[in-house]
Amino acid sequence: MAEDDRTQLWLVRHGATEWSRDGRHTSTTDLDLLPQGREDAEVIARRLEGEHFDLVLSSPRLRARETARLAGFTAPEIDPDLVEWDYGPGEGLTSVQIGELVPGWRIWTHGAPDVDRDGMAPGESRQQVEERLGRVVARAKASGLPRILVFGHGHALRALAMLWIEQPVPLAASFPFVTGALGILGWEKDSPALVRWNS
Image 1: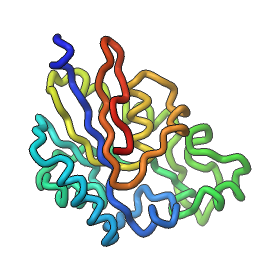
Image 2: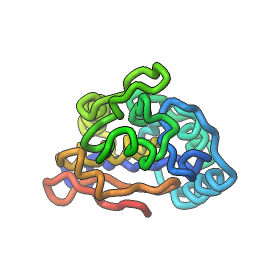
Image 3: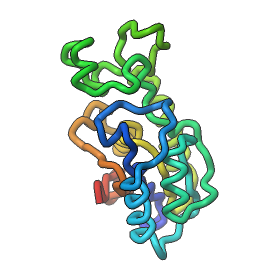
């Protein structure tokens, strides 16, 4: 396959929500966008104007679907594998609050916090997230489609990017991905590459 024919995976993190603004971990809580989040999506719409995508995928969460809609993609294919990391007892808490329960906690090394919080179900381990998002990467690379656009979430898309470039997922700690950001995963010669990030 010619270099120009290989799949590029374009990533969009959803626009700002109340919890993303406040640094609260948001997975299963289905929040809508703030006015700023709607503006984020409209900026993405202008940046993607005139671009062609062979497949558009979205997380089923409202904040991702609404970002897609406002960006001009009204009927993305919903892929449950694109949901955010399930934080379990960390849902709704900030990193500082989780660190008070689990000293030294980072999602990249610990996975969802393993604590008992009001009987909440446990969240996902890093291995579970790698398996789930690995399916997205494998599907994209095997698709033969030149361009795929994905609407999703911060931690999940960062993990997906590491899987694309065949690097350990904890390396994603060094690649923050802000709300309303665009990233492009593609190729540098024969190597899968992070072509653009937070643009």
